[in-house]
Length: 492
Image (cartoon, rainbow, N blue to C red; front, side, top):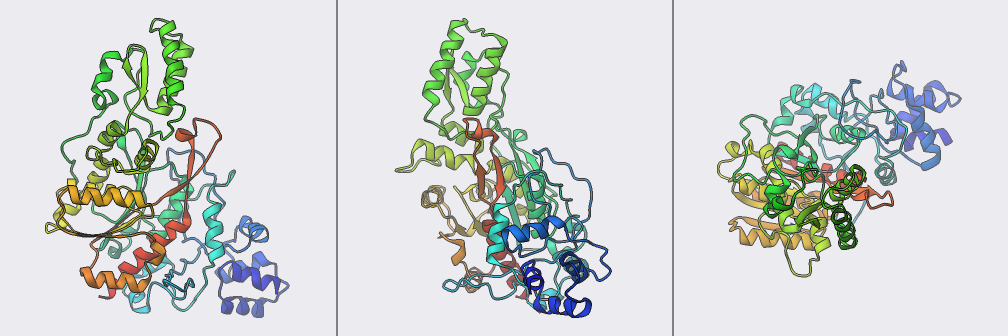
């Protein structure tokens, strides 16, 4: 019974478990039974880390999509994720949707007709098999969302891009998932596995702005005929804050902001200390002190505003660097720290617009957009600056203040389409998705910026050096809605 329960927790169906035990006997070790279900020849082995973690933490709940083991290099810190069955040919998690009242997840997002419309290679990537049902446990999903960042593990291999395997992935409705934080390699592998095995695209924002940050995207958009938007934003700190050029010392070689700091409580005291250091040395501190000044300036976004005097870049300058309209985040009861925090987690508009620019020739009459975790409206601003009419936008955003920012921009930018704002993605049940599709005809484009969780390092440098991990619960909800929209559109 213990082996049966653990096999069920691993996501195998009751029929699979009973069949393998009946055929091979209950004396066979658990690892061997799992291998025999996956592959009777046991050529692919279940990772022992998974079996060990079952005993400690409860159910795992799903298997990742089969991936081809290959070398894939990212300029990120070492992976700190669980060893997630690199060689396991697993099963695509059963996509479910939540009813507004009932929190059970009763059925697959893909019906049989839609499955059959996909080619064999595409079904292989998704792991679709209507004859072998399996379960997804809520507890397992929660566990996965918490353990994406464990240390001392082997990197996963990035799956082959689906673009070359099946044309189904490249069809409308188009989708775009973006994350602006420093995710681990294995987190990007997991994202790719759940988004049709498309290889992520990484773009450096310093090619488009005075911000130096790598943004990662997974999407099925065309990459031909991309173009830049005008006017271009400032490309250096001194262009963003022209008054600083007069006071900028020759030994300060910074050109770009390395991030957006939201800490404000220590800025005044820090600037006073640094000013005294520079003043006491008549503007030429020692090499060690120069290094310390540059380090603190990098962390807290400090620029030269007077003789030997530093101050933090304000939200207005950061909005300009990020490509947003002036005072985009300026709303009533929004503190300085809240403005900086909302800007810290948002898209860089010029970078995003370049990646979305292929949509313009596809939809000359405008787009109907489903915007998930909209934040302060980066996707909407980017599409507007591309000259794409927003016929309708359904925006899902938990923050009330962020919803106010988007609504304010919608009105001030002269949008003529319809804006529908929702707070909770969990309330976007399948029947509501279908109602929205019926009301708007269809969604042409689905975009998501997934919120992240952050690990504090207990020091002031955490704002720059903190390591983000994928919030799998929120990401799973995006995948659920995305697949529901695409399956409904495919049937229609």
